[in-house]
Length: 157
Image (tube, rainbow, N blue to C red; front, side):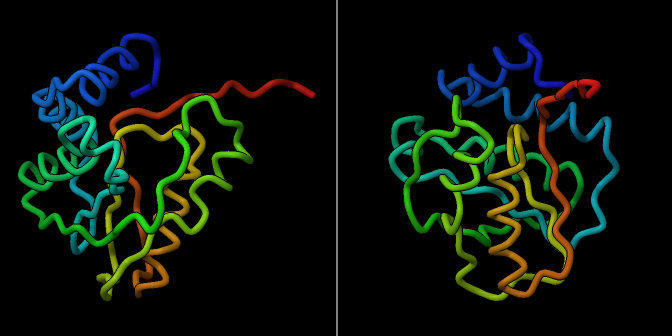
């Protein structure tokens, strides 16, 4: 789904205002539009502990678990956060990449094929850093599944 104003409000309610049931609704929308991935398992981008405590839940994990149930796939916590970074919102592309570089680790071997779930794909910096950790742990293919994606228009040069 394009990350437009309506979707942004939905994601904000889900992530920041405790409307946890919206994760299941988001999973339903994703499952209607995408076939189950050809992956051994679903994994999710972990939130940092402080934000997880503030929110009382982990949005990407809730989405991943709801998708796993719909797609009859296992869902495993393959990644951990190695450090807390600044919020990505409002950062430039380069700052986002620096902010999440080395922020994830896969403490055990990863399956060869993993579908990595996150709530919103903005610049790809977060899923890129998380995918790198999964590949370092043995994954040969990491597909990314998100509820929403920022669509950038291309400008003529």
